[in-house]
Image: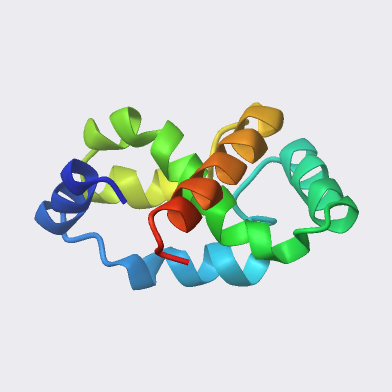
Length: 109
C-alpha cells in the first residue's frame, strides 16, 4: 500500500485481516460486480501468469482507488472494500502487470 493510505488505515483502525484474506480466497468474487469478476477470471484462465497475477490485481485496485479511500472513515472503508464498485478491468489488469514488473525491477520478487 501507499504510505499515506497505510497511515490512514492505521488511524482508522482498519486491520488488513478484516479484508485481505477474503480478497485473496474468493478471488474477488464476493467483492466485485459479476461482469468484473468474469473479465478478471477470464484473464486468469487465459493468461500464462494465471492466478499468480491475483495479488497484483488486488494491489492495482487499491492503488487506483487510493484517493477515494483516503476520504472515507473506518466503517466506510470496510464497506467499500467489501462491496467494490465496477472497474475498467482492462485498466486494472494492465496496472497489475505494471505493479508486478515494478516489483521485479526493484528486486522485491
